[in-house]
Each structure stands twice: as C-alpha cells, then as structure tokens.
Length: 158
Image 1: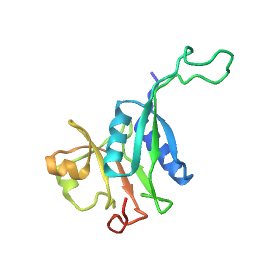
Image 2: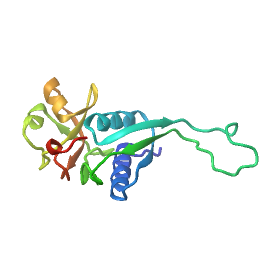
Image 3: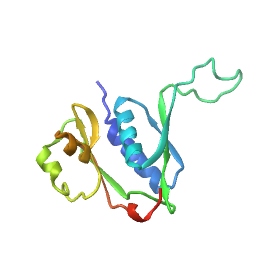
Image 4: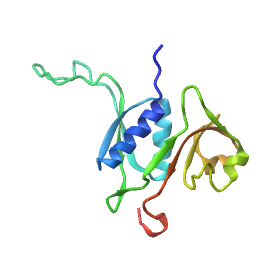
C-alpha cells in the first residue's frame, strides 16, 4: 500500500511557492488539505482557495492534445504584504509513523519548541489552531508550526 503525507507535501509546496513569489499554486485536494487550507485562510496566511474538479475527455475539444486533469486539485492564492510572505518557514510535525502529541498544558505556554507563532493541532474536532485548542481545552497531535514572521501584523493593514 502506498501512502503519502499530503499535509507535509502541501506545506512544502506552499513554502516553495512563497519563496518563488508565485501568485497561486495547485495542491492535491483531500479532506486533510481542505481543513489545512481552511485554517490557513482563517489565520490570514493565504487569500483563498478554489477547488477544481477533474476534467474528463468530454470536456476537452476534439483534436487537442492537452493533458487531462485526472485529480481534484485546490488552487491556492497566496498572500503577500509589501511583496514579502507572511512567514519565512514552517516546520511540519505530522509524520505518518511518528506523531507528536501535545497536551493542553504544553499548548498553554507562550511557545512550543521555540515557536512564538501559530501552531496547528489535529484534534477530535478537526484541525484547529493552538489558541483555539486552549480556548476549547483540547489537546491533540501537533501538525505544524509557522515561524519567523517577516512583517508585524499590528503595523500592516491586510
């Protein structure tokens, strides 16, 4: 059985797209990525995303040799402030075999392993930010942490 870590792949794709100053990037669409992109949009790291359904052979004009899109993808529109991304890096903790569990107590501290910014945690209620977990008094599995903000949100109008 072949399995992939779609969350890690999506985060790597987004980070590479930010470094290359892309306006948008296509990532595979699945339930995990849907929750991830919804949280990233809620935090303000991306503008929005659109789901593009697969195109079949009936949608393609006759005589064209353009490749078919056989998978559902999400087109993610990236967000920049003063031509710089909102974060410089992301650390993915979500691995298929070694998952990092976090308790409410560890999330309540000001930082987790040096991260003073946004943490995403997978809980029994879905993918939530670390601050939402503290408010709802939940622990879970640490997915990723964003670090080294380039801009200061208090001085920038988004």
